[in-house]
Every structure is written in structure tokens, then in C-alpha cells.
Length: 319
Image (tube, rainbow, N blue to C red; front, top):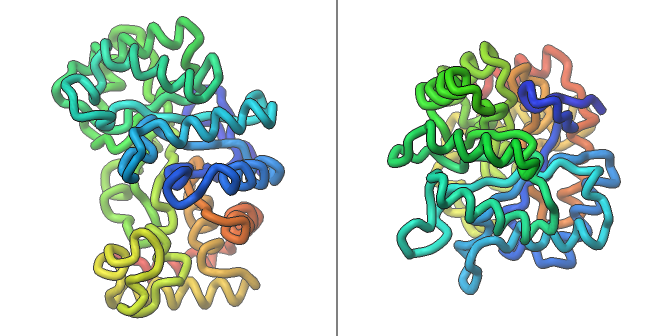
């Protein structure tokens, strides 16, 4: 199981990240601990979260995922065995100044994340989304301070367009500030065009690691959505069916089925292995809500697709 560097940060991760937005949403604390144990016991080490997870659940206020991870870190004693990647910037409340990438807000938000995670440093601190209302210089200045203080090891960007990412790199170079080492875009076998046209060439050219989310297209690429009646399956069911259940989606599922059969595997593992085989991808993010799904995540890392299989999947998912 190879190690892949997160950009040029010196931080090396296994080629798959565990998404934890499901913690205290569709996964309770007991199961979350079991999933984290299974993930790390398999030799995987990159855990992705955000301060806003899972604020959208009735009764939650944000920070739930970080809190669960922090409790697990304390119980397991595995802080030095894992890479914690969290994010800042999404709306954490209705009041003014409860979101964004301003210096004042990040200073407050990072302390809250550190407290919830029960750690004194964050391996990868990511801007969750671009903030056009805050000067790039201001955001990078506070990241520079946090890196110098040892509270953050490296920084990354999520949901950035190529032009804004390029501008950020220019500012970092000009002012001697830390650079965004990673990008977190949406990317999977169905959602290919936006990433591949502009972001992928930019990341390859500039040595930026890519940690893509929705690697299984909200569950569509697992094969559990086959008909319109499957809209009742899972938290994203109706949206998955309306967005992906079409001629192209059906063609992708057929190719996944065929390749899975050839490799004595299943569609979920193949879809993740396809991502891991792409040169620009450092580690796709995938979530699990039970140990059976976790087994698929682990086994996807061990699945090496041959060039014929990859070409078959590329052709089926052509846009």
C-alpha cells in the first residue's frame, strides 16, 4: 500500500481518505469508533472532516464530526498514526462573522477545531470554500501565523476554481506565505468534466495533491441505484436518481459491473480503484456507514486495475 505525498508538504498519506461527514448524521458514535478502528487497523491514515459537519442534522450545531474524532483519538491513542484534515469557512451559525476566511474568524475557528479534536495541531487545514469577500492576502497571512505556531502543518483548498487557486499561489510566492498543498474538488467517474478540463492540468503542473470528494457519486457508483424506484435508498436517494439515472449513468454502471466481474470485485471498489489509478489523484474520499462498506473501502486500495479495464471505464464514462 503506497504512500502519497500531500502536494509538496512532506506529509505522506495512504491512497484513500475516510470521509466523516456521516458521523452523528447516519452514523452514531459507537459505529464511528468501529469504523475508525477498522480504517486505521487496515493501515490507512487520512481522516477528512470539517468544522461544519454535521450541522445540517436537526439538533446539531456543527462540530459533531470533529468531536467524535477527538474522542476516538483520546481513547485509541492513535494521534501520531493518523493525518487529520479538517476545514474552515462554511457557515457555522446565523450570526454575523460565523463563516468565511477572514483572519479574525479563522483565529477563532481553529481554536474550536483543536479543542474538539483534542489535539494541539492539525495536519491539513483547508479553506472549505472560496471567500471572495476576504482578501487572499489576509487568509494566507493567518495561515502563515498558524503554521509558525505549530498549530497547522499544511494548508489546502476545497471547492476552489482554477483561477482563484492560481491567484492564491501567486500571493503565497510573493509574500512568502504557505501555499495550498492540496485541492479538494468533486470528482468521480460520472462527474468528470469540471475537474478534468481546468483543475487537473493546473494541479499536475503545480504539484498540488488532490483529495476528491463524492468519489462514489453519493452512492450511485456502488450500484445500489438501478431504477427510479431506488430513490428511497439512502440519504441522497432522490437526488442521486434524478442526477445520475440516465443513459450515461446506466452505461457507467454496466461497465463497472463488467470490470468488477473480471476482477472478482464489486462496483464500489472498482470506482474507487479507478480514481486511485489516475495520476493526479492523491486520495479519493469515501464514507462508510457500516463495517461491510468499510471492507469495500479497504479492498479498493488493494485492487489494481489493468489498462484495459481503465480504458473500458474511461470510454463508458466519456462526457
